[in-house]
Amino acid sequence: MTTVIASPRRRRLVAGLAAMGAAPMAFTARANAPYPSRPIQLVLPFPPGGSFDPVIRALAEAASRELGQPVVLMHHPGAGGVTGTANVALMNEADGYTIAVIHNSVIRAPLVQRVNWDPLKDFSYLGNLFGLTTGVCVAADAPWKRFDDLMADAKARPGKISWGNVGAISINRITAERLARSAGTSFNMVPYKGGGEAFQALIGHHLDVYSDPGFGAQVQGGRVRLLASFTAQRLPNHPDVPTLRELGYDFVIDSPVGLVAPKRLPAPIVQRLHEAFRAASASPAYLRQLDLYDMVPQPSSPEAHAAFAREQFARDQKMLAEIGFKPE
Image (cartoon, rainbow, N blue to C red; front, side):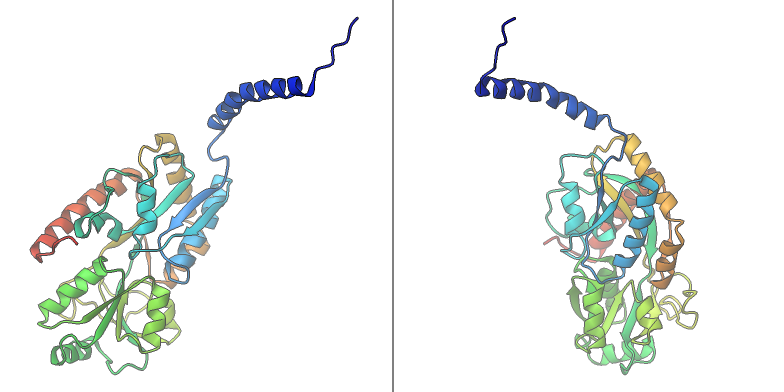
């Protein structure tokens, strides 16, 4: 028998052909692997340090246990919590390994600025999670003891009192503008990138008023004073604080927060993610964080979440038209 010894070049050629044949098999194996088979990125469109951070982190840890894979929190702040989620809308690949937190400013964005994505067409909605609670806060040693004191001062000094919110297009900013207009005055509106930055400014007396969610820990720690809430009823953790409606200003803010993925996410993956995060929403650690920041559990189905987005878009379109707002 004659033994043929292959040259190094021939061995490399054979190995290359074998690898080419194996590549489609490897791709098919990955495609057929049970979902999820690797870590999932959860985009949080706010910077670290705000109220969203501990809440979503606790939820992600609970969802990791449900999914059997790490859910990795990725901070992508910008444009008042719009940029990170908008980037997900622009993704071409929907495989369930990148999802994002969505809130009402994202749905409203095309109505107030020019964007190249559509919140009603470019997301797969996975379900709502919780509702934010908006309050009107001042520093603990601020001169205003009651909300009426603040408004009386604002009427005496239109445009002189600074009022902060996260982002320039949030429902909290828009409602604050409407509140001032209804009272015959104005505030100096100041947008912030995140709640952590805004609370530092408030406590340091670089900002007079802050009106956004996430105030619970700051109030309980005695660093800020809660003057009123934009809720339908008084908050259980702050029973002595009146609602704006009680004080004669008929403004209630509803701010649901949910999860989305890129468009055309396969239905089985939508359902898998929804079920995992729905189960994670019962986590005691997550519920403790919601309570600490005066947030309210509001889980919903993917279908209900998508329906809410359509309804909110229509409501905001009408509201902005009523106040004469023009897109930038």
